[in-house]
Image (cartoon, rainbow over all chains, first blue to last red; front, side, top):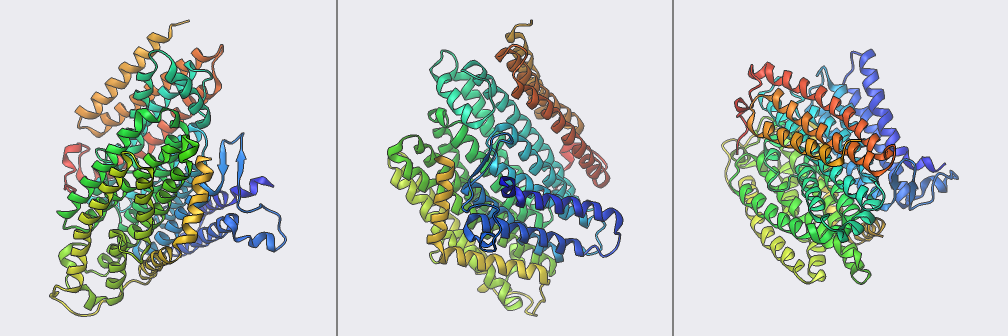
Length: 510
Length: 103
């Protein structure tokens, strides 16, 4: 019965196919596809929570798994442990938020409504498999599953010029980056062929690299492979200088899909980054840790500075999410300390901070994008100037947006503060040059406060031309409320979440 | 048996051609072709290293090569669909014409 731990993945896959097949036979009542998707996601979330320690099924007498789950399928090269469960929760929760938002955002009579939800579920399956992969082969295939599904989603409003352009840009850049990543993987595979046994298994790669580094003339191919991997996977998480696509795609895509890309798909990229660099390439850490550290700082600075000059809210949020990716990269740098048993706990704390920040960032950015979707649905618009006096027109939405923006800036009682705190304090604990990463992070948070607070100023202080109340579309309204409640709860329950994230980090770093 | 060096040089040349095509060409289909060339370079690498590693070939590399070809096909399918969508709204697949989203 060990295969039961894969049930969340299989359930989402089954719902995705079921929706796709249903759409062929059932031509009317398209609005029910959203509810069907929601049912699948909630069941999957329940199963994941159960595996993580809710233990509802075992209390009922079903002997499916002993929580917390830690199962390795050596033939499938898939491992379900606390690390993957933590990420499953993020992904599925983002899926739920976006699905609820899409109920009102995607036109009820849209001909391809079924495909929209089906592709979204497939992308989620891909991201969940990334979080469980222990082999570059599985990782690459699931990465492609997640990417290819989202290309189609970005171009979903195919009559709209911006959406068509966003889809094309997203596809071309995604295809180029995945080709470069594949070339990098092939070089790393070649290195393992020379140093012991040819393998694509992440643990095997780490062992082979340790041997390879001692061999004459092997350093250059290793560095080449690492650089290509950073470039290939860096595109997905929009690390500067591979970030150019992100603002364009987030602006042009349907806004619910922007939320999905920024909050969900980017986290899938991080999962891949953690797996590859902290498991596979950990032996060659001296070759890449400085490069990743520099990229982290540059990403923060460029993201925050360019966010200041944006007037389109979707672009501003896109640059802000680029900057946030820089913060999470700190976790990758601190995570390299895991090789030394003396600093293992610091590394785990750092990676726990990264995971925690991924959770809060998914809620904050997802919620903020959904607010933008809501205001553009309510015919208010998605430009900064349209937000003048918003609190008189939509008091609750304006309040939610304020909470989400304050969380993004990292204001204390909210989840965004604690996750940043763990992340930066782990860098300080690590000592050495890692401290500078924390300094850069704190300075950048100060910069970011400016453009987040500016939106709040527009909403609450500036007078708008129009003060009539506007009714919000129900689905998006619920999604925004859920995200806001989520970010407050992740702040209030910081301690248990950090403990859970530390278990997850320990599962990855060992 | 062909020496490993020749195969690696060929794959490096293919990779360089692909990168050149991506950077220089403006036609979306040519860019997609360049991407496919890079993918083929990677597949070349996998097969070459796999046959170098073991007599008869290491299975991991060969399987990876086969699946990479399948992924390339899936990517081409969605890419061509995307080009049609772009063509219907812009009446061209020249990448320079997609200028709505800037800064």
